[in-house]
Length: 183
Image 1 (cartoon, rainbow, N blue to C red):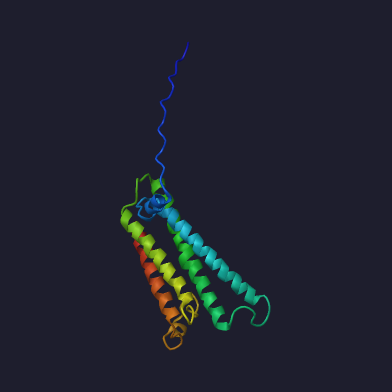
Image 2: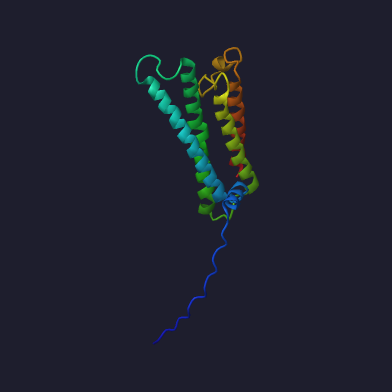
């Protein structure tokens, strides 16, 4: 018994897209897999920044006395490290895996609200950038710990702008997290 196979028709080459088109497609996407990857990439960048702050904290604690950071800078690094690791790395990493994997596991073609999903990512990103921007203020970032314990985080003990930016950025990022949980 002889079998006869016909040669496959040539497949046309995929259209080559420039780097600008790729960036625009990622920035304006509503695909849950791409949004999940954006969450994971962004949270990994925040992880690297928090790791650098952790190394600064470790360098300061390596020997007694002040070597690298003043008392105020140490408190700011401690606050920013805790904030970034908990609220800008761990939580968004979970959201990234949920966006990338969960719809595929349940057999859904997409999430319920894809535009809201992308909006929640942008709120997370800009909130995180505002939190990091508090490091660039003249008096520095918030220095009262990532828990923002009320007697220490009041206006009379922390009158600087960095604490206000820290709080505004976390509110924006938290709002994005809440909107993302709707999906």
